Image 1 (tube, one colour):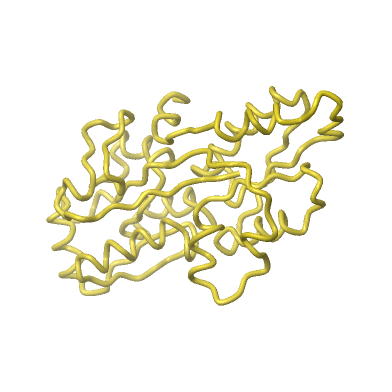
Image 2 (cartoon, rainbow, N blue to C red):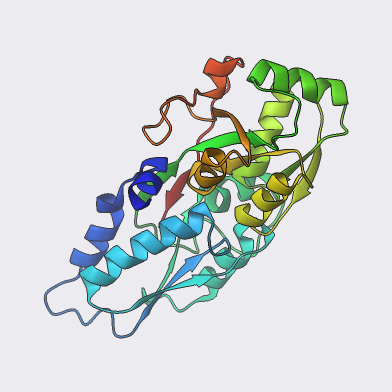
Length: 258
């Protein structure tokens, strides 16, 4: 299972974590205490999975506890604000997805943090595969059929996200714009809660982290219609990209930084 999750994420751990661990001088006493690793989403989601994988590796390198601290809310703003207000001594680290550093500043007129001034960048650590999934009761088996179904519903369908201005939200908004259709946005505090309601039928569809959705896809609890990126993944080699499946030109893939 861990290997499948790693395949659903493209990890660049060595680009950030190892330099952080080895970048201290021989006489450095860092870290002096446990390191807090802030995650901007609830436990169980794709970002949380990535944070815990990195925290484990960092803990082994530093020989000090690295504690994952989930701070969900406001589309990653809660965690980012906490990190910005923490003492600048290296004992608070933020897993910052594209939402925090690029999407939120583009969407919100003001933020309680300054993306450039308030953080010291360490590096990019991963990108993720996202997939378009829907409840099995949705009357479509292919992407063209799903597009036609959404258009015919004329705004009646709803889609779940992990919050406003997140990849889950903006990737779906871009998809809807490209197909010339509307749907109702239902934000949640994380992708696990959102996917749960797609499975139950409370919400029709969503763009979701593949690492989170794979078990539900394999068990037939949701239908998968395509990946948001430009390439397929070894984790699910038979799942085409959205562009391959019937919407040429569609491409979106999130990145994560520390």
